[in-house]
Length: 506
View 1 (tube, rainbow, N blue to C red):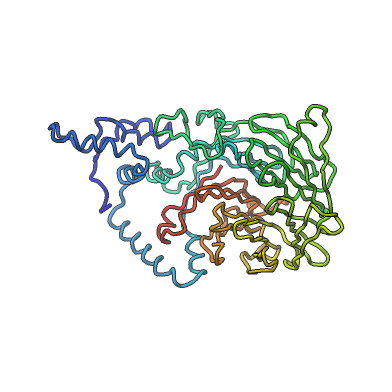
View 2 (tube, rainbow, N blue to C red):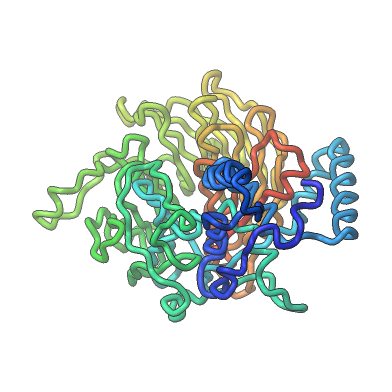
C-alpha cells in the first residue's frame, strides 16, 4: 500500500526474543496489545481512533492486511521495480497461449517447508474426514499418523515468515525437521481434537494452546508395503491395502486394527475407495478383480472372523487399476487393461453378473491407470499410460475430450469438490491443474514429486492426489514427501497467482 508503513509504525520488540522458539504468528500478537498503536498522542482526542484501531486488528477479515503491511519485510526500490517489471511481463504473456502459462507457472519459485520427509517413497496417505487436523501416511516399512493442525492454522500467513527468517547465502530453501527423533525437541505435541467435519481450526495468535510449527507425530504402526489408503467420508476410520493383497481397517489414534478384510497372499491392491455414504467400500487388484464389502464390521470384531465381500467379479482380464462409485453407488466405473481394449467400463451391481456390464469405452490403448468422477457434471475423467487424459460424458455415454496432459503415464487424478478444476499427476513428478468446463491449463508445478534415485522400484513421480475445501491440494510421491498446496482463486489475476501460491511439505 504505497510502500507500506514507516519504520517503527508500531512496537514489535515485545516478541522478538521469542521469535526463534515459537510459531512466527505469535510475533503478531503485538498487534493485540492494548497500548501498542501507531497513535502516540496522549490527548483525549486520540482515544476514539485508538479504540477503532484495537477493534480493526481483531477482525479476521482484515488481519491479513495488517500483518502483511506491518510485519512483512519492506523491499528496496530496485526490488520493487524489478517485481513490477516481471509482473508486467507475466501479464503481457498471458495471451500467448497455454504453453507460456505452463512455463511461467512451473517456475513460480514458491518455497516448501519440509516438516516431514522420508528417505523411502511415500506410497499413499489418508486425510481424516472427521478431523482434518490428522493425516496418515504410508511408506514401505510403516504407517505414521500426524497432527497437522499447526500447519493448517498458519497456512494463510506462512508467507510472512519467509521475509523474517534468518537469511544466509548458500542456505537451503527448506526448513527440515527430522520428525523421527528430533520432532519432540523442536515442537510440542498437540493432542487429538475430535470434531465434526468443517470445524474451524483454532488460531494460535488468538490464544490457542497450539505450540510449535509443523506436523506432530502421533502414532507409528509397523505395517510393511502399504500401497493404497482410503479415508472414511464421515468417521475417523481408514483402510490400508498392501502389496501382498491384504486389506485392513484402522481408527485414527488407535494402534490396533479394527478388522482385516482380506489376508495376505493375494494379488496386490491397486485401489480402494469408500462410497459417498460410507456404508460400503470396494477394492480392485492386479488380477483385474473388484470386490465390494460392507463397512459395518462390528460382528467380525466380536467373533474374530474375517469379513467376506458381498460381491466379486472380474472387471478387466489383464489388470484393474482404479474404480469409482457413481451416483447411488450401485453403478460402478472401473479402469484397467483388457485384451479387447475396453479399458473403461460401467457396471450395474443390481443385476445378474452375466449382464452387469452397462457400457464399455474403448480408450487408452495401453491401459487406463486412474479414474475420477465429477457428479455435478456427470463426467468420468481417466488417465492413461501414454500420458493422455479422457473426459467421458455419462449422460450421452461418449467421449467428450481426449488430450495429452503429460509426457509420461498419468498416475494420479483428483477433482475439486466444487468441480471448478481437476488435477493430474504424472510419473515424471509433475502436477497440472485444469479447468473442468473447457479443459484449459491453469497451473503447472514441475518436479513436485520427482524421482530421487534410480534404485527405487516401488514407483516414480506422483503417487496420490487429493483435493479439499478452499483450494487445498494434497499429494505424495517418490521423493518421500507429502505436500499441501493452496491454490489461489481461479478468478484472481495471473500475477496474484504467483504471489499467493503456497506449499507445505509434511
